[in-house]
Image (cartoon, rainbow, N blue to C red; front, side, top):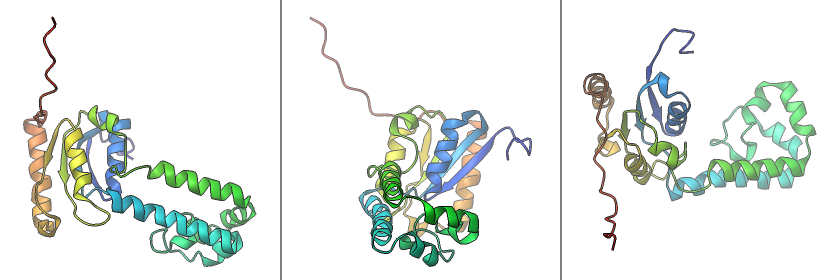
Length: 213
């Protein structure tokens, strides 16, 4: 889309699970990313447990009732609103051809796909998106806004704060983040990046090595 609109660089705003999308885009296309605004990223122990529970509820439902009942249950709600209907509930509801292929697949193979998807997408409590070693190497100015609930843990934002080499951290509780000061923060961040470039963040010094004898 950026190429179609002839836009060379853009600031990317990622909210919630969109933080993972924005940072992954930046890792893949750093030349097209002027800066990142990463608001209330998902992560933490409770987020992992919740995400796994969606898959587990669907797996239990499929084992008990089969794929035909999944097709009947899929009424357009997304995975988080109706976990039993599964992650493909929307295409099942909107695409009859897809629904026909869905019910004809091997049940055991489908459950294996679900299990592997769950474990690949949510392997630990780390904030969703690129791996830590990818974030450390991401030389793009970033503004991080913390969350503070079961899905958007403050620890997720702190992980990004620790790893991203050029970042600012908005140390403001989400209950005080309003549409007015969010917009002000975005505009100020954009101005900072376009003027000073947002220099590398100060880091703790590395371990002191003992002198050679």
